[in-house]
Image (tube, rainbow, N blue to C red; front, side):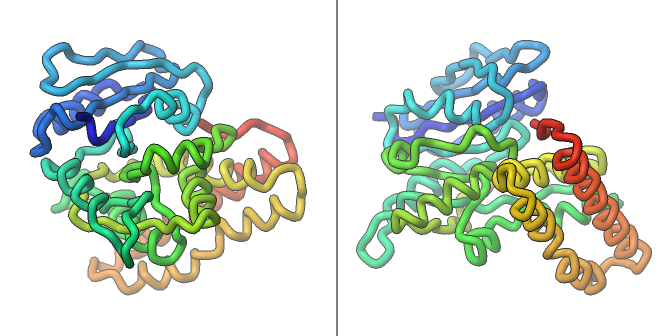
Length: 293
């Protein structure tokens, strides 16, 4: 019996998808207990799935732009009791699926979990000579444990959702290009479901380059603008909320153990990315442009 289905949206990322599929072939979990669904989200070159995989893997397509739309295209057909969401550029540890399933069986205050977030370790392009983008990602990229502890949500790079809960929530808000994972978790909170954190259910995510971080900054502010709707006051609040952590993050930069030149480079890149987000906010709000995918 299939116990978990892995859902992976992909857009123009065949090479890193291949690495992900290879890492799933090395899982310690019996391959008969999991299946994988890849969702091609309109890639310029159609995604190809290798024939020699030791587990069941199917490929579907979703023409609506956005990773959350892609995930919504896959989950309604899931038969397994749990869904594990991850991304094409992630590399799960060999015990990822086994550890995740083990966590689903551990009761908290007599109740089994329905929503879990696993550890995400960001890997720099070079440990010996990390770039400012590497350092920014390592220290601020995807602090999943802090997201769970302080925000009550997890991100879909490593998010496990009970299939019945996803049906109760009617999936993700596909209108958003960013932040719909947080929205899903907060809606689950309203149903009395809290997100649990799984330290042992771990995967790796490569640090993004400066250009990729700029695209992410545009996408994140776009997601906040989408969530705010047409109300200008809410949109302004979305911008302020996006910028609210800059003082804390600046303080963390100053306290890093790296040489001062590296700390200042990280701090400079952080401010540049904030300005990218501010510029994108003005474009979206005053020029009525569409958000980034």
